[in-house]
Image (cartoon, rainbow, N blue to C red; front, side, top):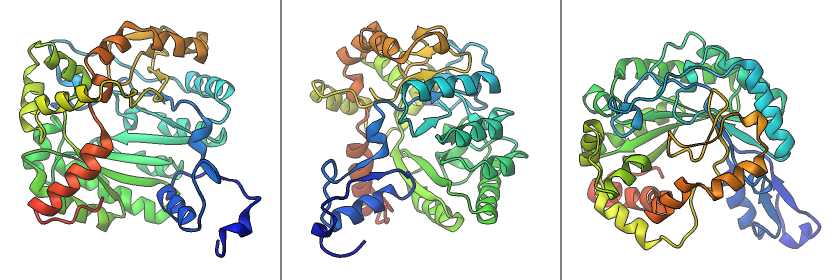
Length: 361
């Protein structure tokens, strides 16, 4: 695309891809196009972005996650069947015809699902993207089949470079396994050259911040994108803290490692209490057993027992009137984690000015 913007007066653009979308938008703006007037993202055409927890199981007990709470453990988990998954996706597409991507995780690790490549193929055959988040601390004999199925995104969760810090916060994980699988993933990406985007999602805390450069360099060598985020407690724990309810021991340890104190984060959230929920559109959140969570940030409260028997409009009404949503807003949890403020700006300043590191953000 070159030339005067006036040459394209009759053009309206829908960006139908997810990979490199930032570069596409930047280029369009540089050519004089205005978002909303001259172009939109495909995601603008779908009111919500659903997630399906295809695996109700996680192999780790990360400190900041409610799965680490042995006093209130998750119910016994399982895996969604291929048949049920296909029914769920087809129902979603019937109710959300412009749906462009589905997250295949909420609380579990999708790489544990024995039929993951088949689920990815269902999405591909139906024209829907697949977003995966994994700790990659699993046996990956099927990794080649997963990459050949061409998921849209793979997020690799990490909280340290080397075993010293990584194996503390990612409790139960082994750095050697994670690193080996990262190298293998990189090899397979080069072999099959899929359109899959891979990001190494690094949770920065007081103990591991000095390791950020090593992580970013590793990601660059392997062909991954680095995304830095502040390490923090899940909102479920943050609400407990705001109510002066004692935190489980793992969560207390995670709280002490946070770069920004819980007090400061809650104070910032309360100052923005009148702003809208930041994850309102991350819905519906469908469990492996087909039940529907009220919110992806809370693992207990359910809106419906079976997604296949409840239409999306009814689920949205139930969510908007739910006690959990009202309680969440009352505690300002809907503004607890402002990603652009804490990640893009705070971490960039911290890494560049205090630690003399390029941020790659």
